[in-house]
Image (tube, rainbow, N blue to C red):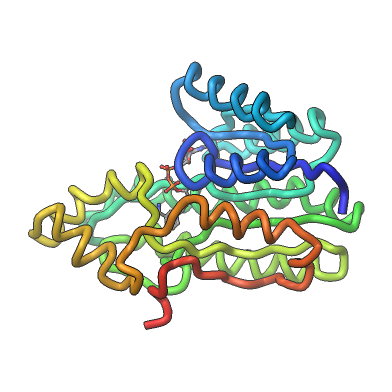
Length: 260
Ligand code: NAD
């Protein structure tokens, strides 16, 4: 295992991705941040992580719908760090509407960002990881990679696709020290979830409070949101030698949701 590890985390300017990037930096890993947001805010986060944890933290704003920008992101990380040892495919968006009203451009964007971008990033890092005999591909899928909910046709399709692609990458990397796993979180209170509460209330004809209690946390047996730090902790473990034989797995972090 190379030390320190060098990671790319897509969609790491917010929510789960930022939590994973922070956990990586705390563990001495160099990190390439990616995602949208206010340039000053992003720079504050980047410089803060770098200073606090004495690691190298860079930022590249590649749009995950643009394959050329994705390839340039991986190139920049390879140039800055020498190599990419850990790839976290995390960038994602959501849209909640019944299928007959689902905007076609929204469906395409969700598939592009939540699924196809992971193909482009993985394609760009895989040969190097195999040649060096070490690599970790961590795909942030969802409980919706394992089960469905109504009004989320694009998201559920993309996340099931991510789980499938994870298994293929695991099989291709298995003899080369490259593991690939999908983390499948339940509901985590991030902007992605907060934004869908009003739309879900509208689709179901219930209040926003009822959405949280009767929809989001209904199947989550703990009746609690999953913490960002809990997803970060699992991502860190997957990077260790102790996790070398965990590959091709879809690992729920969902308070017991898919145990039903
Ligand atoms: P978030 O909205 O807080 O963060 C999403 C990140 O993706 C941001 O950094 C954003 O800038 C980035 N992003 C969006 N579009 C992009 C694009 N075109 N190019 C580059 N970056 C882009 O959301 P989150 O909840 O932290 O979600 C992160 C991942 O976790 C997603 O894949 C999501 O599906 C998954 N997930 C979230 C939950 C949850 O409950 N929050 C549960 C399961 C899985």
